[in-house]
Length: 266
Image 1 (cartoon, one colour):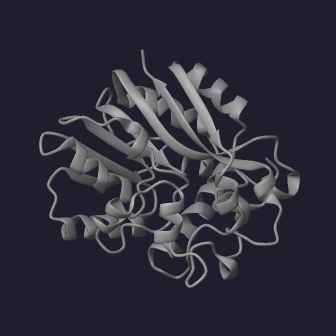
Image 2 (cartoon, rainbow, N blue to C red):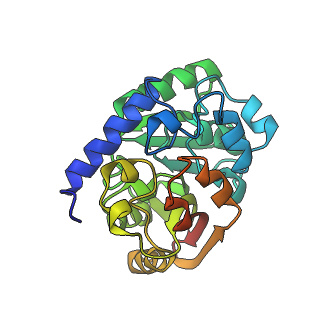
């Protein structure tokens, strides 16, 4: 990758999402002034509804939990059960953690992991508003999860793995943390064709969930190499309409799509 080392990419992403947590910028656009999620053009509620959350789900969240940063609804494909343990990679303001907590109940447990200190602080404050006892948020990188081996029944993530410069490590860590028979329920941005250099080598595009997108074939291969079975990757062509709103006038939406990624640890 020509733009620098992995730490440079991580710091760029951390800076970007720290600003979002502090409400200094809005949403997922490479150019903040044209953000997909800035009022009045496209609110977080509008973005989340378009990506598959119900009105009831959105209304059940504390203010500040929904930042409109997702590219799908992983809870909808997770098939969560009472008593399960969930780990959410890149938990942000906590939207998916809080929805999952209701489904796994008091006997269950939800652990959100995020590498941005301001996001973790924001999510913990949101948890206080929810007065929930089965959710916790940990500061850490998804390439080096602060979670013990074979902890989780399910690992979720929403539009975050594309931000990692080391996706192989992310999926290896997910495999380590899952119990045997544990599963992945992920929404992410994937490339339908190799990205042009002007997108792939741009730090702003990477931190906007575009430039770091792996192809569908690359993702399948990475999951297989990590040890996963029953891999299912499904792109949602209709997501391109929303992705276009991220930065009107740019052409990156032609190369990417929101997708669901499911797999099982044998």
